[in-house]
Image 1 (cartoon, rainbow, N blue to C red):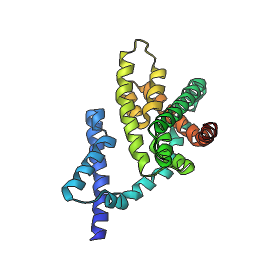
Image 2: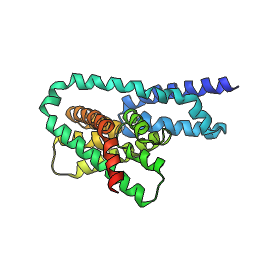
Image 3: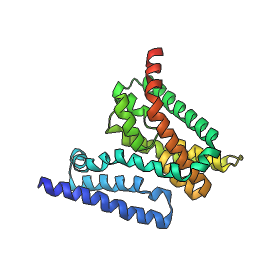
Amino acid sequence: MTEFWGIFYLVWTVLCYFMVKQLFVRTQKIYLSPIIIVPILSIALIFILQQQFQDYYHYTQYLVAMLGPITVAFAIPVFRYRNMIRQRFKVLIISSSLAMLVGIFSSWFFASLFNFDDIVKNSLLARSISIPFALVLTEKIGGSISLIPLFTVITGLVGMLLGDVLLSWMRFKNRIASGAALGNAAHAMGIARARQRHELEGVIASLSMIISGIMMVLFAPTVIILMKYLV
């Protein structure tokens, strides 16, 4: 029986992802994105079958483990758009650096304000980058692998919705600035929305997310240690 549920959950998750992805490609509605719909359907399935989330996570953790090696795939857009990186290097570095600092300090401030324990606090510090990078960073700073996907998805969803509204209201229109904002604030979800807005915004959002993730993994542990020492 245990093997049945393991195979069932794994097959369900994979098939559900591909079906929802096809729907999203056809409709181009951001609220139909797999990262939103698949978790909702999976949670509903668990409740209907009266199963435990811990069991679902246990049988599908292999999919989460794949996120580590998948980070290698981020080298592809970096190589493909290397000329654009050279042209927009200052903008990408400055925006990604500011995004990293704002993400770390805001998370640290609110986590301290509400007296969260160290595991939750450290997990929140990594929520501003995409899940593959966040998982790597979490291992370095002592966060929770279970909490990171939740915090990251919430950050991406809120950043995408509020960011899109804010950018639509602003009179200042700049494709590069808008793409960098969505990529840094909402990572994967921001990229999806940026691509719908304009091709250049999508490219800049992708590069911003990648550069921000790399910078967080490389420098965030040092910044966090300095913050703990100063505080």
